[in-house]
Image (cartoon, rainbow, N blue to C red; front, side, top):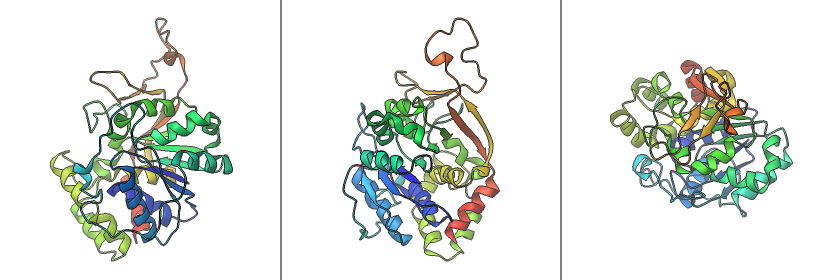
Amino acid sequence: MLIDTDTASDDAVAILMAHRYPDVEPLAVTVVSGNMRVEDGSRNARYTIELCGAQTPVYLGCERPMLREPVHAYWYHGSDGMGGMNYPEPKLRAANGHAIEALIENIRAHENDVILVTLGPLTNVAGALLRAPEIAKMVSRCIVMGGAANVVGNVTPAAEYNIWCDPEAARIVFRSGMNLEMVGWEAGRGAAALTDQEIAAVYAFNTPFAKFAMECNAHALQLAKHWQGDPGMTLHDPTAMAVALDPSVSKRRGKYRVDVETRGELTRGMTVVDERHTVGTQAYFTDEWAVRQPNVLAHHELDAAKWKALLYQCLR
C-alpha cells in the first residue's frame, strides 16, 4: 500500500489502521499540501508511524496546488493539525527525495500488486501521472477519499475539500484510466459517525492507539457536531481506509462516469457523478467527456457496524 496524505487528525487514524491491519505492507507515505503545510503533514505522519512501531518512509511532496493558492484547514484540525495535542517531535526523519518520484518508483516496482490510498488533494498523484502516465494501469486499486456523490459538499455547497483544493489535479487523476474508487465525505456521516458512547468505549480499550485516535480528533468532533450537524465523530479518511482494507465494508456502491468541475463559478471542485447513466445517451451530447464509459466505483454508504468493527480491531 501507498498512502498519499495531507496528514491531519483523521488522516493519522487512517495511517494507523494501515500499519495495524494484518497482511498489509505500507511501502511509503507521501505528503501533499492540503489540511496542513507539507512540513506539518510530514511531522504528523511520522509521529503516527512511530507510534505504530514502524519505519515507513515519509516523503514530502507538492507544497501547493497545481494552479491555485493553497488553503489549509488548521481551523478544523487545530493549530498542529492534531487537535492541539502538540505531540513531541518524532525521531523518524523525513526520507530523502520527492513524493512524486517515490510514487512512481514504488508503483513501478510493485506493478499490479499495489493499492494507492489518497487522503488529501490529488496534486502529488497528478504530478506522478503527468510524469509517468503508464503507472495508471500498474495500480491495482486507487481509493480516493474525496468528492461527494450527488450530495452537498463540506467546503462549498457543491464541493468536498480535497477535490476543491486542487480540482485540476483531481481531473487529471479521474481521467487517467486508473482503477479508481471514490469514498466521498458523505460515507463517514450519519450512522458511520462515532457516538459519545462509542467514543467512550474506544477509550476503554486502554491502548495508546485508541487514546491517540480519539484525542487528536476531539477538536474536529466539536466542529462536526456544532458546525456540520453530525451526530458524532466523523472519520472520513479512516472510512476510505476501511474500504481499501476490506471492500465488503461498502454497503452501497456503483460504477459511474465521474468528472471534476474546474471552471464553475459556484461549483469549483464538484465531482459530477452520472448516477443515472445519462451521459452519451442523447444525440446532442457531443463533447469528449459525454461519450466516455464509467470510470469510478463510487461508494455511497458503508456498513456502519462492519466499519466500526474494523476500526476497533486496529485500535485494540
